[in-house]
Length: 150
Image (cartoon, rainbow, N blue to C red; front, side, top):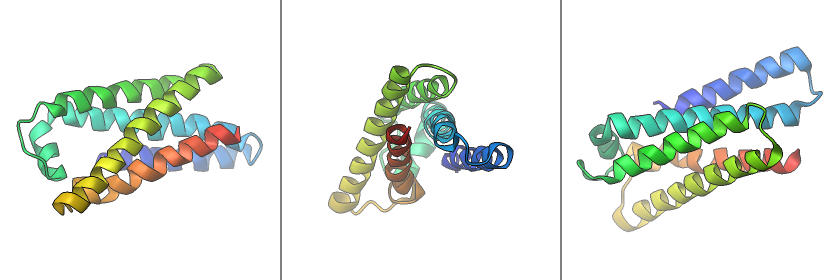
């Protein structure tokens, strides 16, 4: 459920961007919005979920409870969240690239892990094969595309 917050926030700010500024500078603004909301806010919330609620999160993914991987995944999520928010808040192009790369590598890597779990283990739990799988693929591809387009 928390994964929707970043997506909803992104959609709302994109609508506001169009309503207030039209198409002028839209790609540049969309990159900043995507970094803040899709990479930043979303990753921070998901990372905090792994840290604060490790057992329910593990269960939703179809993984064993009590595994220390949750701490590491949570910290990585918080880190990417902080990078995303900072990158969308006026830092230079190189900092944005670092945030894009961190977000894309982590999320696309997670997507690959989800697919491996589906194929090898038949793991079709919502936290492995549901919306999160699509988000883990499409959100970083969108951010990469926006970065390249600007």
